[in-house]
Amino acid sequence: MKRLIQLLTLTHRVHHIHFGYGWVFLPVMIGYFPDYKEVYRLQKATAWKVVNLKHFHSCSWTGVY
Image (cartoon, rainbow, N blue to C red; front, top):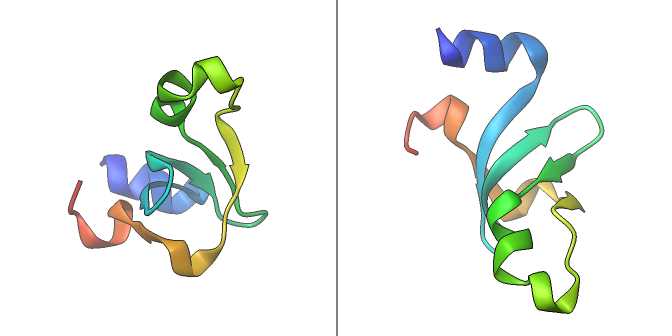
């Protein structure tokens, strides 16, 4: 059921090679990576990132979380 909702809304759970796990809205390729913000909070990192398709895999398609 979760995968169906992710596919319909085009918001996928992803694993990025630099930012870790998060969510990406595919039409505009903007991702939200909450763990990245927590780890780098002293450097004032933001959780919102523009991502490139070749740097992450979609856990919604593969089922590997």
